[in-house]
Image (cartoon, rainbow, N blue to C red; front, side, top):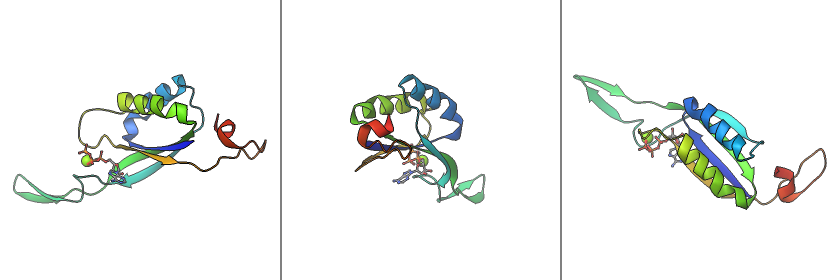
Length: 113
Ligand SMILES: Nc1ncnc2c1ncn2[C@@H]1O[C@H](COP(=O)(O)OP(=O)(O)OP(=O)(O)O)[C@@H](O)[C@H]1O
Ligand SMILES: [Mg+2]
């Protein structure tokens, strides 16, 4: 199993959610976050005024899935979360040691189906 963590623009979430549903992804967590990439936090000058780009509002999506679903999910996010502009976000993949469904006590990939 892997955990896919995707930082995306809040406005693309409905489209991404739809794409994930088509891939059969039901369980996911979302968190509203503030973040910065390469552009934020720098001082810029625009029309003679100095301004500071602070943090941007993003959504963090977290999904723990069976290995076979990792690439299809990445493909959905790359397709549906992209505007081509700076700030489209990032995808991080982590190994997951174990998953347990509390209600049934199912363990492993079956617990994240
Ligand atoms: N290295 C990182 N580690 C953790 N979170 C990150 C990292 N880089 C970006 N993020 C998160 O992703 C959000 C969007 O980042 P962003 O897409 O602006 O990255 P970028 O590297 O600046 O790429 P781009 O040049 O396309 O804007 C940030 O607001 C932050 O929440
Ligand atoms: Mg950026």
